[in-house]
Length: 94
Image (cartoon, rainbow, N blue to C red; front, side):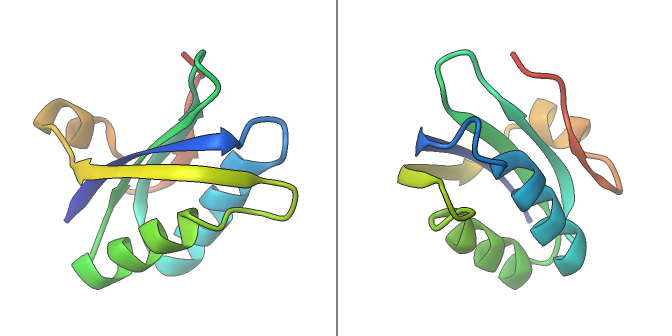
């Protein structure tokens, strides 16, 4: 299963990307995470359905210091899934 999520709220400058990467690696989820110029954080999560869904649910909480307002979660577009690697990386911000 591959999900594309966009997290809004106070999620930049609080270690959100590193926090999500650590959670993803511990869960065996592949993909990437990056900051967007609109102040949101975007990620692609790829792995076993139950694991991806649990990580997406955990993304609604975020690290200490974050104030997550919303997580928009959708099945990933094929082009986004193609960018996911076997690892979970912090991608270049857009």
